[in-house]
Image 1 (cartoon, rainbow, N blue to C red):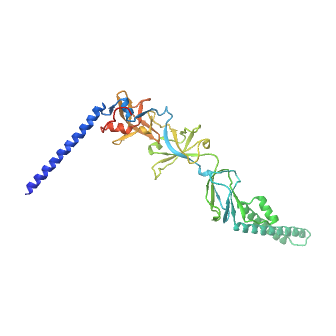
Image 2: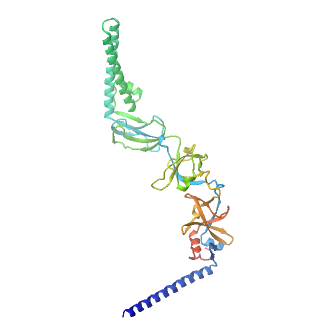
Image 3: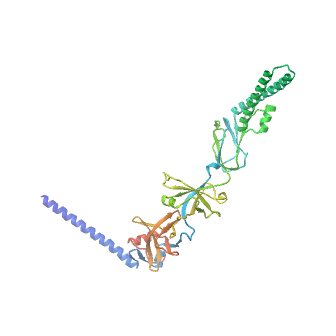
Length: 393
């Protein structure tokens, strides 16, 4: 009984295998017939295809050139940033409440411009102390002048005069110290002088920017209470911009300090000034820093860009290709090169890659045409998956 069951199972399996073979042969026959009908053949990496069929498949081509002749070196993507040394934080000199904002983000400031107004009870207390210390200083000055006169007449001893002078010195230091605190809080010399003479106390103080530049960020809102030293705004000083570019490990090994950096939108070239000794743990890129004279005339901070670095270590036999021309197959990179017989799939080795361009090595020639559109159709034909329909669209 067992033997009969095995025999039936083996017979069913054999029948299933035969059906699969018949189905496979039928599919291959249909594909072969389609290729013969469209008069498209492939031999190894050569696809024999007419100009009309290329147009029907939506295939478009672009020229290649030598990387060095094209001005390409190592092409890297990155952004323009402010150097940290050019960013200043405007902070609260005393605890208080933000009364009003006088600027907005992206505004241009001059040194001394008012950023915001602060209502501070703490500042009012400092002013009271200054007025009190100023009064004490005036009394100490008068007492010293009187004791000087008495000492000259021989009425008082030298020790008493010295004690009076010490008191005057202490009063002077105290009032100068409080005046300096008020000045750091944003009060002008004229306002401090008026405070001493007129006793015009006010809890309102204008917080000013010490530098000229652009307002990057306003960090508070009207009515918000802040503590002494709290950040209120960030201002970027006008001047230099840095370029921070991202390179792969292989690209980073080709770049050196002092290499020339060129951007299409900027007339002047820059130089590489620093190369990060470690790779970023987030994206495994090496950060390349470059300086560019007059960068603020052609770039904005935060702008994404692509730069070409003319490195001495750049390959002499590289080819500049559009990034859209690259196709992958079995872990290798290829381009479809147009020739008289049709299209040839050509293996290449990529040296550098960016969003728009690739520098590669391979058996290519300057001026050759590589497919940049319709690659899916060409790859399908190349792999024997079918062909585009004939006839004009």
